[in-house]
Length: 423
Ligand code: HAM
Image (cartoon, rainbow, N blue to C red; front, side):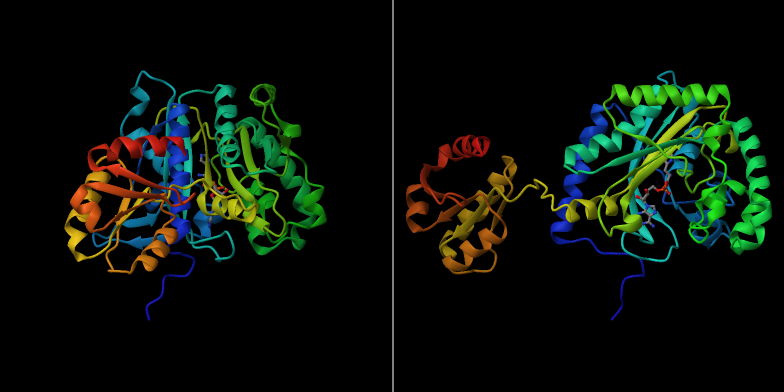
């Protein structure tokens, strides 16, 4: 039997319903925030990610799905959404649009060749936003508020917002120097990857999953102590705006993020679920004021975030939050073959009038049909027998309180509209 690739999963049943429910909430939320939906290709030139996400990030150095297409081009399945959205912003000259800032949201599959484990997949879905054209700290706080409000709407509890600042280029250069001095005496104790990071990008050492518990990691200088005055001011303002939005946060100098493009604000939102491990990191993001230039666009300030869909749904499941997913409005039961044609057209009429409707296709007996209506969690059952067919008066059963109604065919829609709005 052919099996699905390692690190992927199939969607069906209640998981599929939950996904669709959360997608709808996200769409509605993005409309409230006035963000515009964008979509970019799932594969892009490999170069985009090498230059965009950064050669020294784990994602690019170890985890990309690269392939050569039939025209000998180096292609990569996108490991994240930011680089593609930035490419699209530049290529479509969106920096010329007057309605600045350009606020985008996206949703789709991402691919990373990681070691699969709970909450870590090789194909996973992200919802994210990328905002271009403003350095306002109001936007940093707004972007952080999006996942926080989404988690609130969905009822997730125990959410922790961790923020940090990676400063500007000057901050980074001074800090790099400090890190090199700090780690020099400990070089022999670091893993081979970190030895390389020491030479190429010492900041990445702090993100190492192998050396994480070494004493020299804990005593390493903190970037927050190296912020230039401008970066410090920006960071203070972000915190002010977060407080105005009623968002609790903590400043955590260990949030450095695994991608190379960040400047100034970075953040992660964590769930607080026991034994959830890395699953607890529900989302992350930050400012990336240099990336548009790195990818050959004009100087453009930008900020964004992305959240993992699987982790969000896992967290909802762990916290036993039942989503209010839509169930079937009406299940139609023809009593025999004679009523089938009428029932079949009634089913279509009801669907076209806005009710989710289904019908027995299996010639079940009445008991089997009631069971099926329960399985589908139908709100109402319409039973069509000889009498109903002749008199055009339908028998409708409320499948929750089991009350029965007799309704004339011509009054059916009005009746259903009324009872549905009551529930
Ligand atoms: P990231 O931290 O690499 O950031 O990913 C964001 C989120 O995607 C993570 O917090 C996690 O929930 C989810 N995620 C990442 N890898 C996996 C995986 N293998 N399996 C399941 N879920 C995963 C970014 O991707 C940046 N592009 C975020 C950003 C947007 N920064 C600025 N704008």
